[in-house]
Length: 162
Image (tube, rainbow, N blue to C red):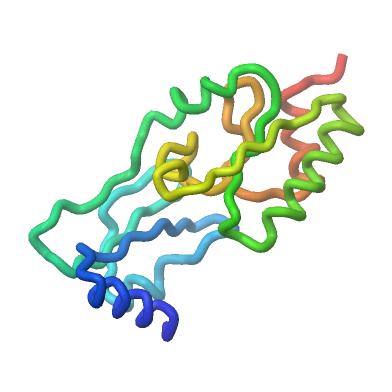
């Protein structure tokens, strides 16, 4: 709560329009309760369970929205395995290492890691999480960091053994 208050104070001090953030019911992200208690409102949603919350400082500004067309954005990664990532989470490097090792050893597929370096790049990511996803042949197969075991389960469904 103190960190959130500091963020809001910083936004006001820097004359920003407000603060927006993404939450979800699933794993790897903050839940919505703390933010709702602090006056944030849901301004957009995205499948499977993402919500975009905003607390406006300037009430006259338009609310933000998700930058849709995730399927179209994923299609640019149509051949092979990609891990789209940023430096947002301290658990991500281990997830990438585990997934990369499993992909190469068990499936013979070396993943390409795409590092997002800016907020603009994250907003153009092929999933609502914006800072991590795994794409296999143009299809998002994971929308948040996952374990090697979960990755195996996904790959076994996506690449049936003959």
